[in-house]
Image (cartoon, rainbow, N blue to C red; front, top):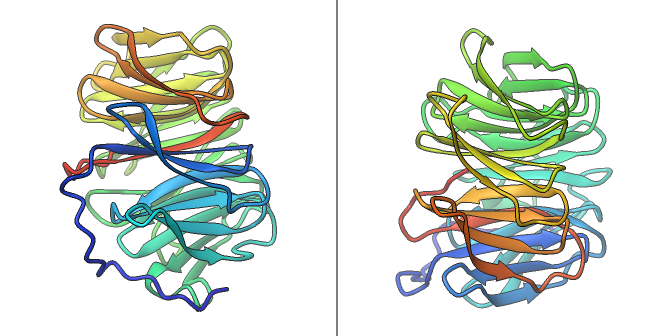
Length: 314
């Protein structure tokens, strides 16, 4: 059904809620966690296939995209499913992100769609068709002019406006699995060649790089302030300084399989989601695992955090 209109004018109060994370898995489930205790708050099995991404909408709802072509919204206050956007794409849904009331979704058929979350009964407000292969991820800039970044199997990072004007089309030597913003002027990308690249938006110039691990593919990058983190097929999390990417802040290596998603919690903590069926909360200053999130029964693909501080790391 597309008949339910979602609104940001919810009256729920989250002042008493602790910091939370949402994860999703090939076991068809979405789980919301209390980061401080490592306990599950709610668990949902609304999808009929693998769930690829989760993202928070206005710190009130969790959205998830899956291989069943659907996007599902969960109300974390009531613990119930708020809405199901059926057949959002013609094939598997991958990337998912929100920019105010705009929702971006990506697909294995190379399309990227922008939706008005306030009225999902309508068709997408825009469909971006600049890619030629599967699009892994979409992420919206959180500062400056609104831009969307997309990463694809076609070896490109593309940055574009909500009307489809291409700002940057940057070729990589291999599949580009992820992109994360560093303010309005720079992005970092994750690539299957194992290299994390910092790229200027205006010029498209690669201003800095680092190699993740030893011949590992990089699956995801996350940024916060002057930190960039990468997760790879080697099961490691690496954290580097944005301004000096040759400087390694931490290497975390407790996972037994690929690290697929990352999210900074604050200046000392990061969460990693892995194909080893677990997510882990780390103190990356000490390397200590603070909590193990262990409810999923298959590999984890998606991770996103909600904080009461208004700081949403990408």
